[in-house]
Amino acid sequence: MTEGRLPPGQYLPRGWPVLHYGPVPKFKPDTWDFRVFGAVREREWSWTWGEFSALPTTEVRADFHCVTKFSLLDNEWRGVSTAALVEAVPPTPDVTHVMIWAEYGYSANMTLSDFTAADTVLATHHGGEPLAPEHGFPVRLVCPRLYAWKGPKWARGIEYLTADRRGFWEERGYHNIGDPWLEQRYSYQEAPGDGPVV
Image (tube, rainbow, N blue to C red; front, side):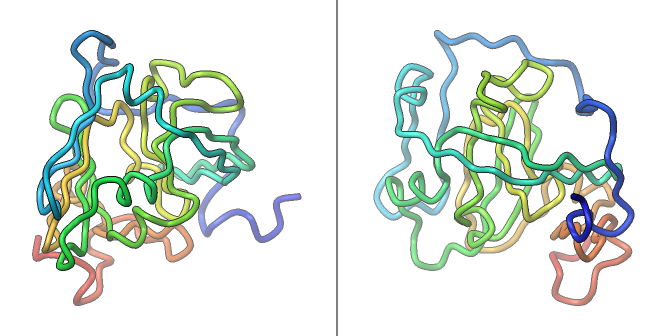
């Protein structure tokens, strides 16, 4: 049943299309780490792969909407709760946004409230299996309320921001917020206050 499930302009594909910027990075567990930095309340933090993979996990069932107009319904994700991560490494009270950093310097911004929503997760598994490398193994951010480009594959860190700053695609013409239900695809659609000046 898809009635009311697809945002405007979206369709259901056959399979899960593979889309990303740049090549698939090689995972090196001995040197991999995940950092939380920026406007932290106490101190910056990082986890090795062994430490990160030992963190408590949560399961989220959610739809997935790509700005290229395909949607995947009823995905089962498992990974580290972003809300739990923020609780473990709290930001300063004036933090309003986060920047998610990934391999090759890729980045995506979002509000702290979107990042800490109950269905936002640093996913390591999809459909009960570890993520495939082309879909973001070992970790990708999943924020179902926003277009999928806001959830980078191969995530490596979170930067706490006290003011909004555009990420990789936002600097190249994509909408600063990226709400699929409002079809916020491109920066020319932005209303005053939707984001920093392009």
